[in-house]
Length: 305
Ligand SMILES: [Fe+2]
Ligand SMILES: [Fe+2]
Image (cartoon, rainbow, N blue to C red):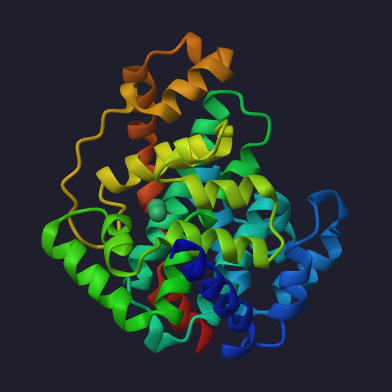
């Protein structure tokens, strides 16, 4: 039953590209996003970013936000240098997805979706730095993309997914629980397939697939564990999907935390209370940054000016 659903879903995802009328600039962008960072030319990035007013504005806004400690950055070139390639790629990716989803197909409030995604990206990166994970920028990307499956479900299963959100909000339960009941699969599975379809790395695919249940991986990778924890923290701190969830978060007994403790010696010197207090301390800044950077209404306003 599940296998049949999966193959139907896979076939639908292959058709997604033709459903959406993406602006011409997005094809070279997507091609660039597939390249490893060391193959990307900074000049090309500056050129692509400069070509699109709303993308340039996003980069400038983020580079000038308090979170990055930068001030008075006025050119695309200096914004790209300040942010770093991975973060710019994330912004481009976010905007790509934002435009590919037809306006009338959004089920989750787009504002809430991007707040949650960027919030998770920033928290995942922060955690990655704290445990001395060697690629914090990759952690940022994994956090940003972990819930792409919601967009797949919005486009391909619009009415049923609306019903999922309605029931989840009414019962105050996590959306993936209701997805399983109504659709027979969750955004983790559709997100995994979209990430595979777009040729993203295995770690990013795994993070999308396992972020609500790290036990799905025989040995859970650190990225999936980090995204799982940051997703929980964001949802517990008003960066969820626009409705209240009743959730008891006990990170100490969480399998993802246990996995990280055994994998990263830096965590051995840090207790959980201190760790979460530090993340909480960063949360206000993160929420302010999310508000200033990824307000979808602001993006729409910029795109029409
Ligand atoms: Fe999720
Ligand atoms: Fe999430």
